[in-house]
Image (cartoon, rainbow, N blue to C red; front, top):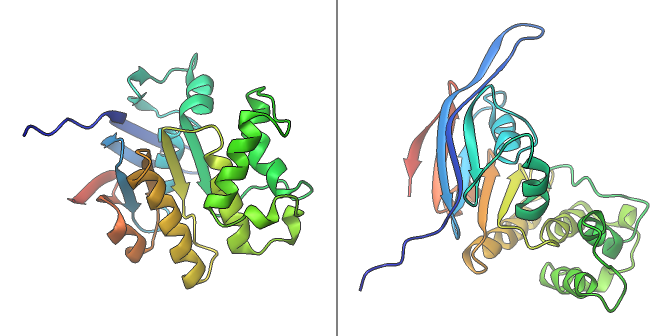
Length: 231
């Protein structure tokens, strides 16, 4: 039986990035990357090699000096990158970036509010937010003030928030770097679940060898290029 080809969700070609202040630094030197639905991709490398910069370019938060990024068949440009980011992408950061004066459910609903969707208790967005918080083990903390949560709980809320608008691609920058080993493993399992089981794509910038070993693809970023691919 012929296997059905996987759908490409991200294609990057010839990405170059340089910074010129305070001194000229070439960070990316022609990076190519293709990611399909269901893929989990680990990008490893030493601090300062450009992992976060690459993730920001792939996530349309930063522009490359040269090269192109396609998301779900759409070439990213200054005219559509905000729309693509809002409709197709989600981010999970090491430092959570939660609004600590808001409750857990209010944080998870924030992407829906930004997209001007109804978020009242009977709305689809609210029901999805509740479902996601249950999935990440935070259903009992719906109306809890976020500033009172532990680091692991905050990261679970951040993952639920990232998935609120049903993104095609999740980008995670050292998502468990501030967590203890047990909690980190739980976070890894959650992220990988959404790529494996729900058919999303996942790209993680990480130093964690254990996390990288769980991904379907692994790359090493060094001297501005991606190498060391293993499947």
